[in-house]
Amino acid sequence: MAAFGQELVGRVLGGRYRLIAPVGAGASATVYGAEDVSLRRSVAVKILHPSLADDPAFIKRFRAEAQAAAALNHPNVMAVYDWGEERGIPYLVLSSLPTARCGRCSNEVDACHRHRRCSSASRPRAVSTTRTAGGSCTAT
Image (cartoon, helix red, strand yellow):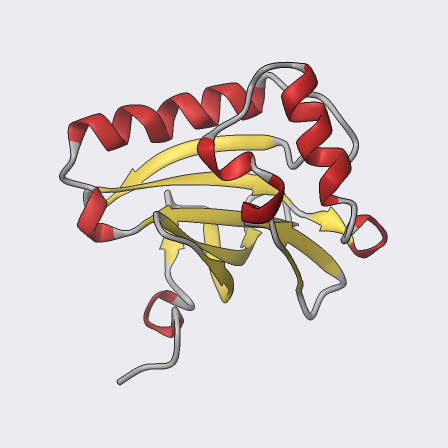
């Protein structure tokens, strides 16, 4: 059995997002540190678990989460760069937060609540950050 999330490492999604390493997983998705090979920048890619990809209602919520997050503009909230689907599995492309901002999840959640753009994963106990080898962090 492959280590957690390793089966997708090296894959390129949408012709431009190379998955480098898994950084976290939740009930609905796995987050990978990745590289945007077109713009040469670090990003995070949130990939919906395949078991949920056949649920139209869940896909609708996943897209709504992306749209809500894209409407936020706060230095401690990951920006949504892109949305796509690879082999029937939806994914989001997000900014990576600098290491200095890791641990400020309460600020991220506060901003989310102030703008009333929270998904169910935006509860403080549901948000965690992971530092990547490149010095950035992702929130899952």
